[in-house]
Image (cartoon, rainbow, N blue to C red; front, side):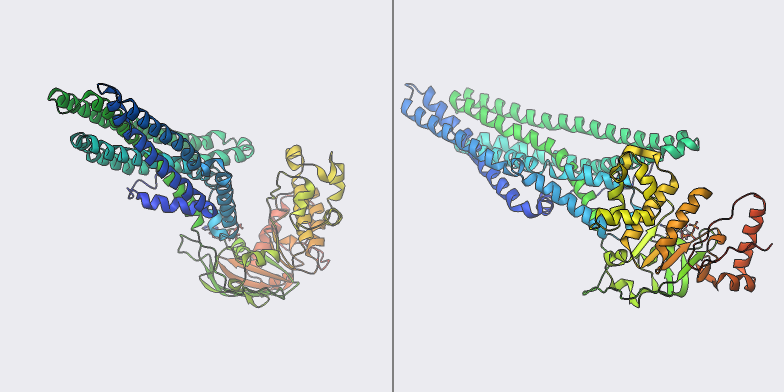
Length: 612
Ligand SMILES: Nc1ncnc2c1ncn2[C@@H]1O[C@H](COP(=O)(O)OP(=O)(O)OP(=O)(O)O)[C@@H](O)[C@H]1O
């Protein structure tokens, strides 16, 4: 299985991680900074509290005991503890106030916006599961532990530092012994983060890939069952799960090994301090009170160090999440000059358009030019892979062509916001996507502010009012509740009702009747007839008999327009179109009793019989 990030990347510095955190916190960055400031204060106060141990013990163990001094230090210790309690509470403000929820929400909204403004080409290249892993999983991995990890990290660095300074006042030799731990610990920490960061990225990618495989498998199950491919496809899923298991196993092994290493370093430090302390007592240069206090402080120094090691994992999870989120946010939108333009008329013009998909160098459209007049019906025909869908994608500004220009109403698409283009274009695909919402809302997606009456009018026009009225709750029936109870033709008519409601001046029909039986096709065709009136229509068709009434037929082959004209002209020309027509005529002869297919009906053109 492909692991794309096997090459080592540098470990981000703490400053870099902090910069990313503030960026992710967005509007709540001041709250995050405030929380961190209180974390620093709390850590200092904790260090001071530990520093007070020695004078307290010394006053108590003196002969005779110095009670007034002991009381004073006890009061100081209590004050520090109380202050620490308040400061710790303030330090978690980022977590307990609404800031955390706000940041998580804002980041998801930004990602949602990014998905909307991202070039369609980029969007189609991403798998649904991978996107869902970023929006759901990575956002939580980045944001939820942010406050907690940072404040724990601060405490685990500053408290030992203050404890170390306090120890230096009691006995500089012990402070030096404690300092030995730092050069010992630093390389262990750096090595751990370096390797772990890499592994966490691989783990995050394995999670995203498995999530994508799972979603695709679940969505494709009906098809897989029908084609008897559940086993074959589940092999891919199993491979993906197996990869995830092996990555997790390695990560866990690494965790255990480095945790043990870290705690060993800390234990060594503690033992070293004890040996030194006992040696100093035996040689008479340290008293028992000082040693007891020092051991408390040393333990306090060693414990946060061990925590710091374990925090490396949490940082790495966060870093891996940051990377996935940033990668998605970094995809630039298609450039639009300001002010953006809006077309006034709706003829479509391709001029010397050359287009290659990303990551390919082979042109899918090669220097093509044509004009589709406003309110005309144009059919795109040609063999599979000839570029029909790509032409319709370019009209929706799926991506910008490498050469040439696509214009709507004389305006270059590069000068228009993608939203403006989509407002003026309705698309009816062969595969209809219905959301798990009511039928009413599914149709209303065509125009969000449409009234219930307008939705119903569109449904009537699309010939779906009748079957919707028969559903248990009519327009309020949820698509999810009736599952697969809607036929392909019914789903298609709902999508046409959406397009009728949208009332866009340009309509793209991508073989909307190709997968339907004859009866459904008749009903859908009647709905299409309403939709296409008075609009600029582009229809992709494989069955030529459905487009004989088109104003223009563009015949494509290998990314070029090889013929162009009306049905009769093209038949007369006796070229590629005629050959395709004849081939389909022959095919029909094999099905003697098949009904005549429907025609897109703007000119009431009768479907002529194919000539053999
Ligand atoms: N996202 C993509 N990335 C790379 N190549 C692509 C992509 N989509 C399509 N292609 C390639 O571009 C060429 C034209 O594809 P297109 O879908 O436009 O053809 P088509 O005429 O609509 O085919 P069909 O009738 O089978 O739908 C094909 O060779 C196809 O493999």
